[in-house]
Image (tube, rainbow, N blue to C red; front, side, top):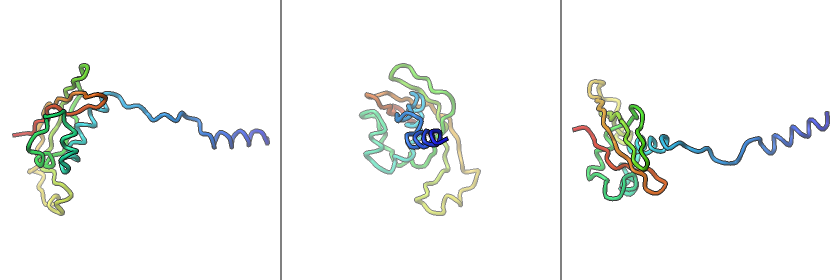
Length: 133
């Protein structure tokens, strides 16, 4: 019994899994770039870094007016990816206070768009991320 308790304590102390961080799939990496864009618009450098060199749109502030939801399967071909994205309008930043609560449900819009990404080194970056209108 004494050895059983000792073995149990050793197992609890050492753990029983590997120390490697879980690996993400290529599709998960692509999706993370799309859904994270709404968080980067407030910072010029982060917004520029989300896009391939020279591809960042000039209307950076407009990207904060929308939420982005993956709306299907990504098509990945080597270093290129195409992702169907639902662009949801009528979403207001929490930085604007209570105005989000004043929005009517009828003011919300959903538009399906296709965004393109490209791998630069080990990172996926947006190449084309059109907004409605």
